[in-house]
Length: 209
Image (cartoon, rainbow, N blue to C red):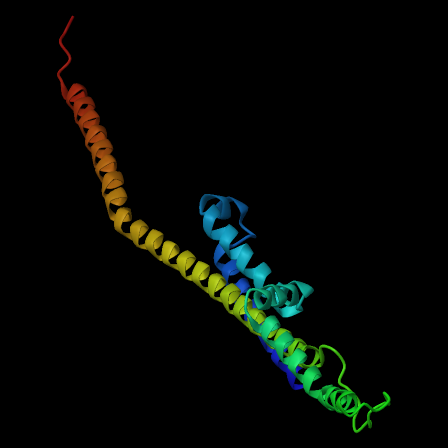
């Protein structure tokens, strides 16, 4: 039950970060989303979400990765050596009894069986699965952390870009308003000059014919 609660909490964190990114992206406004597109950031965000989801689902990929990492170390060889030594120790009474009967010239007889000989690869069979499980779990944790960090960084980049654009709009907006005001003033001046010209023409005395 505790593991299930932790898994649900991790899923909630991933979905929350991904949802915030989509909220900033505003997919319900395709035109704005297309104008504010950033292909590299969006692809990186999608990769982060996919890796985080795969890590939570726990595919056999992580177990194969753990075996691959273990094969690059000396752990399998060390465990094989321990298996061989353990088997040699278990067979030591048989060897001593055989050497003793051979020196005494006795007829070969089975030695006393005090304990059963261990199976071959007993240490490897006991240790390797636990190491693989722990290592695969660590890889899954690292993958989830990387995915969540990637989504968070992409969200921060999106927020920074949005804030920069908002500041740029605020800075450029007064200049646009001033330009419009100047054009309106020019139009008013032109209209006023036309009105003055028309008034002056109307006030001119009519010459008798």
